[in-house]
Length: 103
Image (tube, rainbow, N blue to C red; front, side):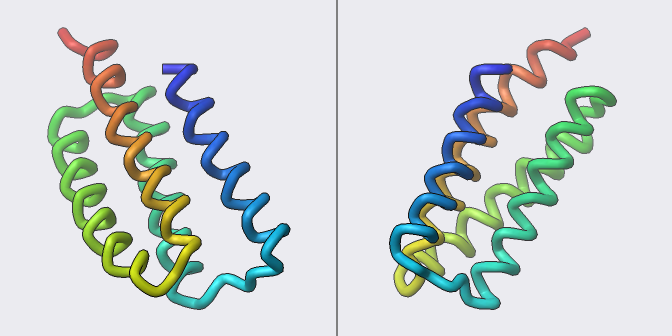
């Protein structure tokens, strides 16, 4: 799980490097997508400490919806690439969280 969190942090780092190197100002749409991504990330953190299978299922749906939105954004917003990668890393994190909390 720690390794998966580190991979997510690496994606945030890559996003910041891209913004800095390209002097890119994120659009309102990207900032909104970024906020949604952070909310789901926070929910996964909370899920780890207080596991609920129903909540895990809801997070999977939210993550899938966010992926669809990000894929559409990617066509016009290069920053969406990094946020989609974070979303993908959340997918990888879900399995270990469920496994650790399996009764």
